[in-house]
Length: 392
Ligand SMILES: [Zn+2]
Image (cartoon, rainbow, N blue to C red; front, side, top):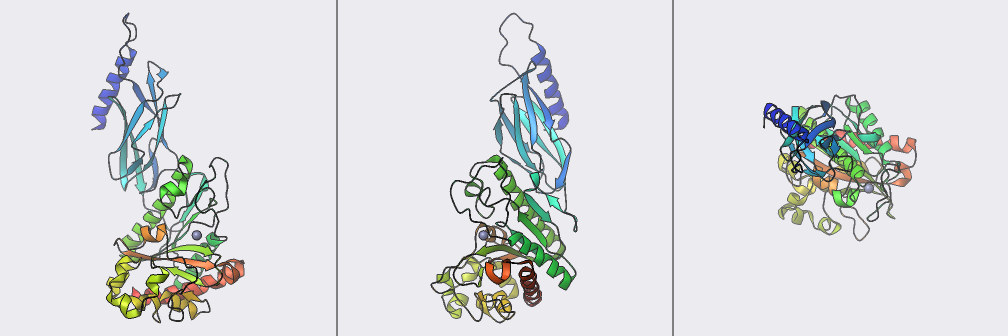
């Protein structure tokens, strides 16, 4: 619907709502809908605005509670949820992630409508973008690399309730590790990766789970989850626009008995226990987070997992034991993390030009001090330099 038509309907709604001087009881007539907050916003394309869109529904000046407000994205953006109900003050809100460029969203109740306008822009390298209340941070970069740290956060704001089920143990210092990696990459390659971190403690939000388990129905946690995921997607889109292809790393920390790096390509310990021939001939790469990379590189899958130029092997060669690698082709019966929600969503198991891996780092010697984080970051930057040159 054009904004002009919406304006006409809104005027009619206002006029009808004003006809309250009749002796007969007023019919449940058109209500008035006004934009209270969120008009003319500007943010990153595809990322929810920090502030919700807010409308107010009134009937003859009085707030209308429990009215169903329907939200419709009119351009390339997305709005959540599709329907919200007004509170006692007649207010309803929704989250809007604008598409690229000028965009708009319509809110509607009965025949009353209001259109919100706004725009979505690309992230500028060197800037820092924050989500609502600074729970999620995105530092845009220039390299074909996206690094996220979902579990390193320490903030426990009282406005977000504790999660009541699922894992709540944090991956200590992994957000600092992500920033150390960015510094090491810049020192080595002259450019920075895109970095996305959650500052919320995992008790409040788990950005490496699907929305239900991640936020457990809390709207503020859901907002932060959407920001975290959208920042990664914005970053991946920038990487593809700038380079055509790219690599994604989801950084974690584990407390398993063996202090080695665990690289999750979505292959379980049992998958990795297969021989190289079985992995290469069985088309196992289609179930991995490096599916597109295997196709593009045109090499046997096993080379990318545990050949001499595999990421694990390059890290082992720099003094950081890793599985899978040429030295440790599979984890055996020991505990092993094979890759989570983010690796599945932002790697290439479902296609797309960005492949990825989950890196689980032990605490001792890697995450436990700024010095050790910097040393590991330098080794990982070197390994990534070789890896990207070799396979991309
Ligand atoms: Zn984790």
